Length: 162
Image (cartoon, rainbow, N blue to C red; front, side, top):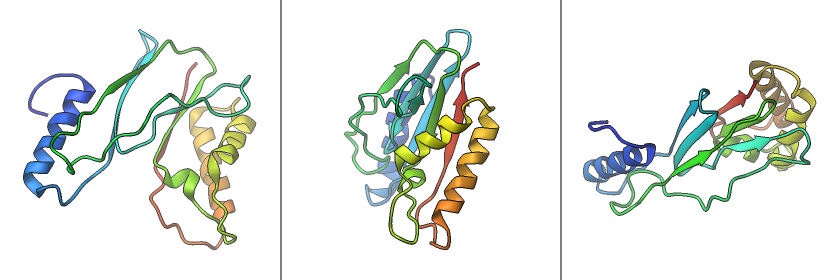
């Protein structure tokens, strides 16, 4: 980062540098996110990742922002990344920020773990800390996958608002 700016400014700048360096033949994905607890808000910008998803105990599943997706970094010089705002936080909300490898993980029957199963894991453990929820997701994901190989990266962060 050579100049200050928004998260979208940073992604746009990084994209231009990568396109210059690789000629559009290599790419990377990234999600930038900041949490401001004083303002009770989250700002995020994506380059090829899904939006953060929200779990609330009174909802049947995850609440997903209206987000059409974005291009990975390094492919096209004219890509334009947008910054998004989630505000205000409320106590008890749980946000999952993840690569698609989490819900796309398959078991030996080629069934995906899926967001519905992920939502149920979070629902059962919502009374616990973010660390404990994260550990339960990993435990249940490993049990679900069984002997199948992990074909994609699984990276996720659990944020619980107190």
